[in-house]
Figure 1 (cartoon, rainbow, N blue to C red):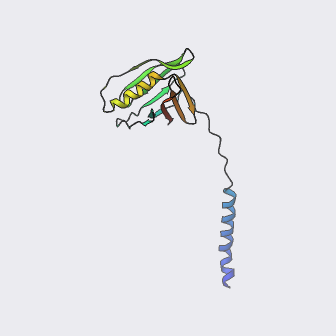
Figure 2: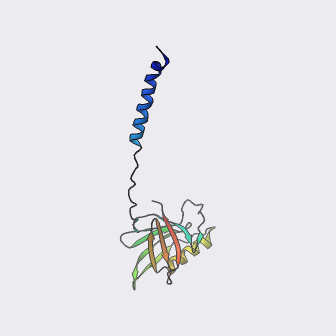
Figure 3: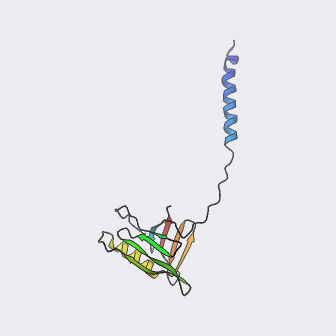
Length: 147
């Protein structure tokens, strides 16, 4: 048996494998990104007034979760937040808020986060980011979807 006939089964297997691989590599169609809901979404704080927020070191990163019933819960990275959000005179606002009062090493970052919430007059979602905006439309804080 000559060498060409001995290699024929191997050559057939290689061609068959390549043909199968070509069938499986058709271009995939990605589904369009679903809009992100304000409510029941874990919004992790990314920045306040353009300054990146430091990791809390406590395992509780600064975040907010808006609920369907108008409640908002979250964490400053040090203290637990809870309260109510809604519209007041046509503006989206944090209406009543409360927080625990534990001492923490990121007090300045926490104060900036709380001030941004206090000054919020509107919210907007673009892509996977939530923007808190002040009375002049300036971005006060940016959150990113994690879950």
